Length: 106
Image 1 (cartoon, helix red, strand yellow):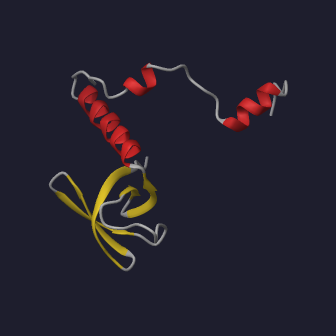
Image 2 (tube, rainbow, N blue to C red):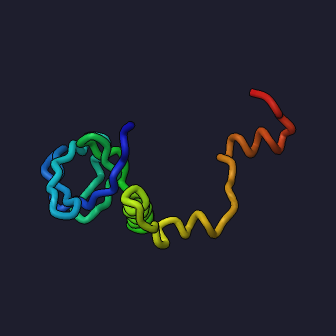
């Protein structure tokens, strides 16, 4: 399984960027996000930044990952998933449109 991590860029040089994840320094390929600048949050998979994220989304993802790690250690997730607990599940737009149209099969 590949897990995307939100990382904040500290520097950019061409298609290479440097980001920090706690004390760990990560060099990222920025070919897919040429608009990324120092200070931006990016979603990184296996050394490649795939998307620039708004800060609030990056922080929610980080909180969820920290909560998941806490649960895996036998602890409590705290409020890491509060944004999910406060709402009911929603279908993706294309499935909701199919449901609204009365479709019951693919």
